[in-house]
Length: 278
Image (cartoon, rainbow, N blue to C red; front, side):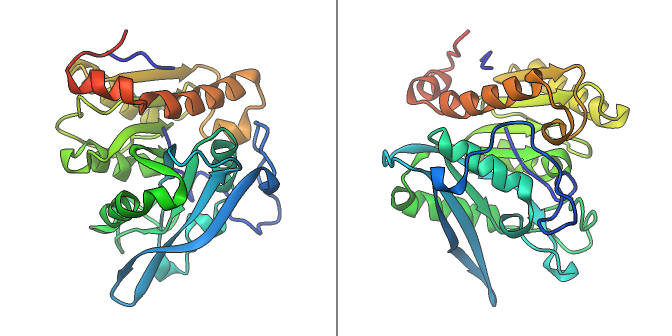
C-alpha cells in the first residue's frame, strides 16, 4: 500500500465572497502577484451554457507541472455562483497550490437540479467532468500542465459525488485524489488500485461524517487500494478555517506534497506494475 503523507471544496464548506465576514484561513496564502491567473477559459459548451474555468499557474512555467482540480458543484437554477467566483476557500487553495509549483483549476461544474441542496449538491451533471478532462488532455500544455499528473481535490459534501467519479476506471486520467472530512452518502463498489488517495479525517467532526469516512477507508484498505489516511484528532470540520494550529498547517503542507509525489511518473509506473512503494 502506498503510504504517502486530496480536494473538493464545497459551498457548504466555505463562505461566499462578499459576505460581511469571511472566514479565516490558517495557512499563509500567497498574494495574487505570486501566481499567474487566467480567468474565464471556456472548456465546454452545453446547450446554450458555456462552462468555464479559472487557471492559477506558478510564476515560473515549467511546461509540465502537476495539476489540481478543485472540484465544487453549484446550482445555477438557484442563482448560485460557481466556486471560481464565489468560494474564497477554493481561491485560497488555488493560490497556495500555484505558488508551490502546481497548476490549480477551479472549473464550473453544475449539480443536477433536485439533488441535495444548493449548499450541498449531491450529484453532478453527466459529462461535465469528462468534458473538463478531455479539454485538459487536448490543451493542457497551453496551461503548463502535464496531463498525466492530474489530482482531484474534494472536501465535505462534495466527496459524495467526487468519489464515485474518480474511482470509475473510465476516468483514469485522474491519477490521484484528495478528500477532506467528507464521504457521507458515498457508496462505491471498488476502489481503483492505480489511484492514490489522501483522506483527511477531522476527529472532532460529526459522528455521522466520521462513521462514513471510517466505512469507506476500511473498504479501501480491505481492497488493498493505495490509501493514506490522516486522522486529525483535534481537528474540526473545515479545520483550515477553524483550527489555528501547527497541525492544520502541517496537514496542508502534506497535502501539497502528496499532490506532487502521488502523480510522479516513477510512482505511477510502480502502481501500474502492481508494485507500490512502502
